[in-house]
Image (cartoon, rainbow, N blue to C red; front, side, top):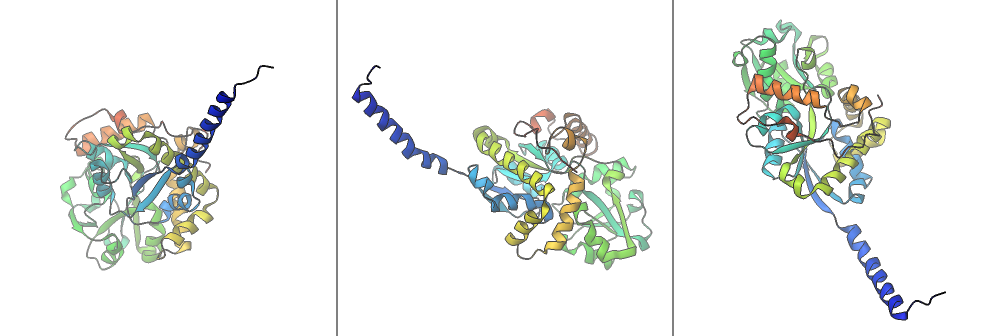
Length: 336
């Protein structure tokens, strides 16, 4: 047996000790990520809070700060400008604002179906989109529905300018509708139960997806420059998020509890109902057969054409530059 020189052994030992000493420092190195939501926290945001509570983001090297939002438009603007590296926003809005210079990239689709719905009082006589001509529609200025309204209006044969938009806070929608200060409003389907409870038999409702418009809904978007410089951090964030959504579909109870624990004003039962409706929006052929969070090429191309045709793009671009599926695990699929 050939003897190994002591000097070589000593050098190897020193190198091993140096590596061992540096390992904790490397393991503890994290990337601070300010993640802006599309709106205030609710049942649809449970997976992020659950993964954070479980320490999954931290274990992946992501120091996650969840920032409450005030509409998709604001989230897209902030991510596009680099004020927030990652955000959650309506994908059709992201495509629209990308044509105005908001350089964002979709990395995970949450809503495979459009969550948008129109709400009104049955007693008003409104029955369809066409009946909104000359009516007042109340919504916050930064709401995604206002950006997409021209597409819905034109798809139903009316002039987008034929309605009057009234600026109201999201929490005032129902009160304004009941008092008849507005004739209609829009809201995400995952809080449909709130409108049902408050309006009862006088509830008038039409899902946009049943009115000829079903673009992708909320997706996680990333600042394009941040993505180039911090690919590993984005990959970690997406992988943990995909895992979290799958976990919440399998067992939503701890996920909703984590959400409520982090946001004291929320009620568990209400947010659980919210989450159950979110599952409906997450489910389609692609999420079930390809991967949870996947942006389908054909649908993205169709959404781009929808935006281009009905809303207009200041600067046309290749839609394939507006999203990527590279960070998704294809073994994780929607199971409901």
